[in-house]
Length: 282
Image 1 (cartoon, rainbow, N blue to C red):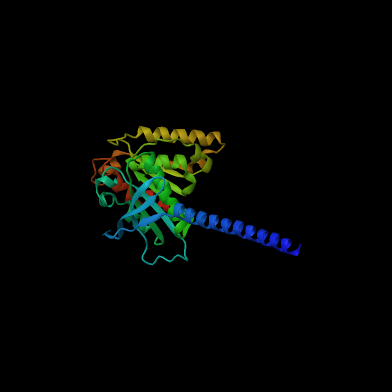
Image 2 (cartoon, rainbow, N blue to C red):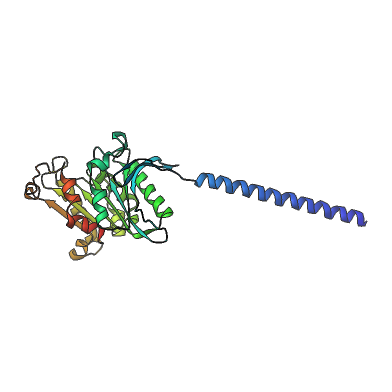
């Protein structure tokens, strides 16, 4: 009798051990698989253009390889918080057009360093100026927010020409990631629903006679967002804190020896302290 009871107890213990072992094995493999799935690989570039490391690659599972150039202060200390600025390229700045071409043709990434010594600057070289590149930029932003000590109230973004179109899609989808946005010599492709809900400040700047886009698209975008804010009950003074339309007349360009408003707008706007100061002093 006692032997049968002992035998039953042993069988129960063995069964319990088998169940426990199976549970631990499954969970261990689940954790390993989860780690594999969540692993994000960064390939660091080995070449430099001035103080930017070139052709770093963020390999994202959903949006593929995201190429970007990066300036990270030499004295970077993960115990301190840093600002983050992302500059989106116009024509000649995409990856297929050559590594570092966006830095060679645009000055936003370099000029921005004068406004905050504790700021990481990213200059992505994307695939296009549409939603794919917008999603890649959002993914890159989130990666840096997660893996670097970034002050979430100091995340800035700008786009020039086609980069402004990319920026419009970014702000259409996830404007809450950014403290403020600067759109230069471009047009708005998305909508303002989330921008208005989140009250993300936007500065539109363009030449009155911009040869590529003209100034009408920005004027229409400005009227549209102002109308939406008014429907939300904001007065003009409050709206002026959230959206600015800055259409530069011909004299702004000719007085600085410039006749091509679109092609050289990026140069003038990047070096305009009023424009860039608006972005980084918020």
